[in-house]
Length: 329
Picture 1 (tube, rainbow, N blue to C red):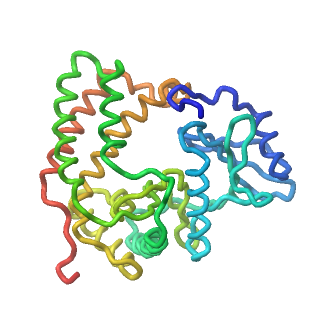
Picture 2 (cartoon, rainbow, N blue to C red):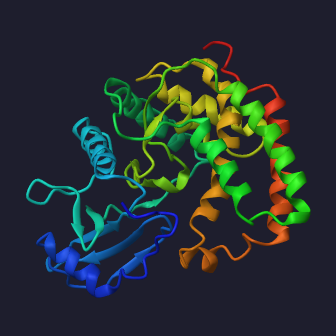
């Protein structure tokens, strides 16, 4: 496999993309429109029958073939349960194709408007479908996808940041001091013994489109973890607003799947893990030219001062009482 820390997409030119799509048997009748994606490369195109498709070129070295196919299988099982999830198309029985070392897959373009996270009717609808997604996820564990754990989300990122020259020397002591304290708190919290199921894994509002209801997209980060991982990223605003949103989500969710209230204590630890993992993700991808272009602030003193403040705020959130369920639940 290619070393995904050093890989970039410099060889992925329009001719290679067109040749790859030709392998599927589809004939392009439009230009390629690049869609917003940093980890992979994603393009929309139209075929001779004016149908729109999306092709995704997976970053070589990030997932192996078995992991990608398990993602595709999960999407297919959700579709079989009439759950609106974008699933890749099959060509001659294969959903995962490859051209010149680039694994890729093709989806029908689903379209839709932005999911309104502050619309409680929409939020309850999303909660119902998340309950159904988790029904399927709990029925069959992943065997190849990664697990959401402190090693990959905290310890490895900490090692990566310490080994490089990302954090300015004048801020390093302060940064790693608060980071290490945060890691200790999170590691203690994540010892909670709760069910681990197959998840969407990255269920933020940008991965939910709205048409006649929700459409869940981008299972690229599907993984094993606690159910609350697919819920907490849909909460925003102050504590009172988050409490209302949580109650609304769970009102729909529990129509199909029982929720373990102990998992509410994992919301802030999971948020902390995502914050730390994101910093290391930027460092890991820095040799991809797209990253300095889109994240020019990453290696500045201002950015790392902001991260120190963010970690301090997150430490306070970790020490605060977690959200709770409504009394009659």
